[in-house]
Structures are given as C-alpha cells and as structure tokens.
Image (cartoon, rainbow over all chains, first blue to last red; front, side):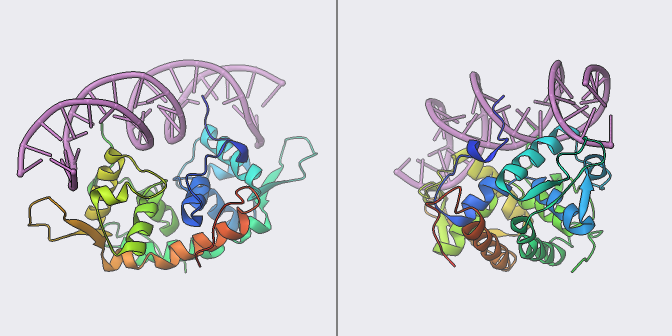
Amino acid sequence: MSMVIDANSIEWRSVCPIASGLDVLGDKWSLVIVRDLFEHGTRTYSEFGESPEGISTNILAARLKLLSSIGIVEHVEPDRASRNNAYQLTSSGLALRSVLEELGKWSQTHLKAMHPDIVSIF
Amino acid sequence: MSMVIDANSIEWRSVCPIASGLDVLGDKWSLVIVRDLFEHGTRTYSEFGESPEGISTNILAARLKLLSSIGIVEHVEPDRASRNNAYQLTSSGLALRSVLEELGKWSQTHLKAMHPDIVSIF
DNA sequence: CCGCATCCGTTACGATACTG
DNA sequence: CAGTATCGTAACGGATGCGG
C-alpha cells in the first residue's frame, strides 16, 4: 500500500533542488523510461518491456503514472481506445537531456573498470 | 539480508551507461551524500545526519560503504582511531559535479510549481 | 560521545498470473 | 495490448546496542 503514484503524494525532504529532483527521479527506473523516450520518440506500454533492462509491468505502470502526474511524460492520443496509444516526453521531460548526458558520460569514464561491457553513447 | 553494499554485489542490468549509472546511484540518498561532500569538503559520519533530509544511520553506513567500494568517496586518515575521521570525494566523486548541477537546474525550473519553497543554488 | 551494526516493523520492488 | 492483483523478497527507516 501507499506507494508514491502521483505528484501530490510526494514528500519533499527539503528545499534543496538536488534532493527534490531525487524525490521525483531518485530510483532505478524513472530515468531508464525517460532514456527510452529520448531514444525512440514515442513508446507504447509493451515496447518499454523490450528494452534490455526488462522493467516489469507493475513498476512500469506506477512510474508512468507518477511521471505523467509530474508532467514529464504524456499520452499520445489519450482519448482513443487504449490499443496502440503511446507515451512521449513533454517539454519538461525533454529538459532532462543534459542530466542523462552528464550521467552517461560519468558512467562511461568511471564505471568502465568494474563493468567493461559498458558502451559509449555520447 | 543481501542489500547492495559493495561494488561486487551490483547487478548490471545492461551495457547502457545511463542504466549503469543508475545501478550505482539510482536511489534517493547516494547523491544527497555526494552533495553534502561538495558543499562541505569533508564530513564526519554524524555530520551527515545534520543535513535537513535526515538520513538514518543504517542507510548512511550502507551507502558510504557502497560509495567507497565504487571509489566515489574515501576516508580521510582511515588508519586513525574511528573518532572524528571523515569522508571526502575522490576524483571520481568530484566528476559528478555536472550531474548534480544539471539535476539541480532542472528541478529549480520544473518542480517549482509543485514545490514552491525549492531554492536556487546554481 | 562517535561510528557503526543489529533488530524489526513497514514499504517498495519484482515476477508472474490475470482481466478487459 | 494495456494495464491490475497477488505475493514473496528486498530495501527502507527508526530505535537501540555496543565497542573504541
């Protein structure tokens, strides 16, 4: 019970912007979802599951709900029947690009020794 | 049991540098610890608890152990008696500065509506 | 005192089965 | 295909213990 599923249920730990960013995005999956949307533009529910990390459907549903309520992702054609509708980044989500780039660059440089198979994408 | 406490116990979900960065730093506390070290230079164990987010001691100990084994933080004078020795960032930890900056800037801009008390630090 | 380790209740995760 | 329900497991978080 009582998982964080929308913006109103977030408990802001402090007024620090870094801690506040982590209150929203500080988990192992949210930025992977954002990365998928940068890579593919739009993504249907089941397409997210095709990424190599293999997110499970309940976590995906919970994160999409939270990211939507924060205004980071949105439905394409939300009024249509559920079949084949997709998610995409909002302008707020697109603004996360430099966060992903800096995290990716750091990882390539500083995790390579422990994880030699890591690839370069920037 | 079986919490992630050192580099060898990390399960790399994929070869993606973003996902791999999140395998290490994808939680609510690790980057808060890094932020404290940027702000104060060095920090003793109990000083971390003085930050407004209020990390609990068991989480702090586990994260410091993991961050040390990854090479992001290190002890100052690790050979001395435990009393008053401190932690600081390694060069790998210092390289996280731009990740923190970009996350902080994003939060100030895109979370302000939901969290008006958020402050500006960049 | 300070730096942790341990205990234990609560919450979140994660795999899978299931429903419209 | 888009999600939800269930249920076992792992992580969190507060309290407390204990050695240096």
